Length: 420
Image (cartoon, rainbow, N blue to C red):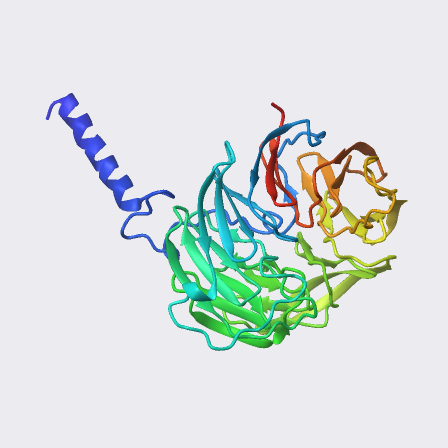
């Protein structure tokens, strides 16, 4: 065989291998989500931590500055976008899942997730409440995107918009204002909280297990691997083994609105009565907790906190910002924000709520309210404010960060913020 013939043969082998494996745009006929090579999971607050360590976003923006593009998507109060490669996925009222090109904001596709889209007609439906139908943020493994809705409908699509499955779970919401918990991928399963915790097969959407003793809250669980075990740390104060739904630990404390933090094997519950706990296996099915500290904070915590380099940053709805030492819970700094930030808002405008959770992107903290105000802070043991920004019609969801860009819901629009 000549050298040229050998190279041609090798090229054909490589092309055949790539065709068999597929890609995000062409998954290949043998693809299925349970056997494919694992990819990075992105969902609410990135991986649930609220940290984007590789991001280098701009620190200043407004309606007229550093707006690369904006696209009208539709109304949504609380959900956030996620970035998968060069695609952005997000939901909008009443039943839509959108895919948007991250480069130019062009809508690549949108799909309905209504009762009429179900393969089997549903007789009974539960009425939606204040949270609406699209508060949960989608989640993706880089090959598929999964969306859950307040109606109890859960669906899976590939990145081209082909629906893989859609199911309805006829379970009444356990929360007063409706559903807000986002779906999560962990241990090869899709976890949804619809009245209680349920694990679904990612390939078919069929139920694998359920645990009716793990109730629905407003906050989203956090996926973690503690001691080599894939677990879901629940806002309801339980640690659940993903393999079979067993509650390994309970009575950690209940977060009514926010989500827990898991960092270096420690579980932090940041609220009025905050705590930090570590766990060890007392038996294979039961974990024992060691409480490291507890701390009393002021206010109501809708926003989830963020932990980085031994510090915890938290904000209460009463505009109170606190920095805690993660090792002992000591309050290192406290500051009352003076809202509203924007000078153009009428004096009788609706009061701002600190609904969006804190995010840490690169070397900066981002703190938003639902009226469009944003503070950029320097992380550290002291309060250091760097910039104040305001955008559009406000946002109740959390922004997401990718490289030099911020993707943010404001009113009915999705914005890409970045230096031009």
